[in-house]
Length: 115
Image (cartoon, rainbow, N blue to C red; front, side, top):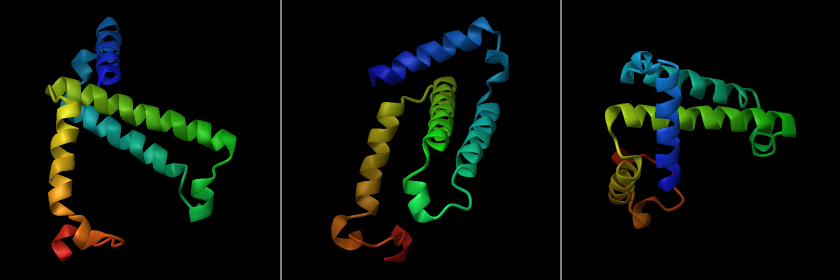
């Protein structure tokens, strides 16, 4: 969690120094996040399963950049909404464990509403 807090503080400072906080509404950050996720998806479009597991080094570097962009926007969005990412992840994983008990879902891709 310390790393997330470090990046949260860095991004807050980065935006404030550039006077960008005025543009970082939750709506705008969520839209920017969506764009970054789409850019990440572009690297996998039309690839086979095997190719997606073994991207060539140049593509992997580009994928890493997009993953970083997604993470940075998530951190910034959480900061603007005062969401503690660690706490949110903990709560969500507990919900997932309840919705997807091992004995019902092992080896299955069914959604919890299907069993």
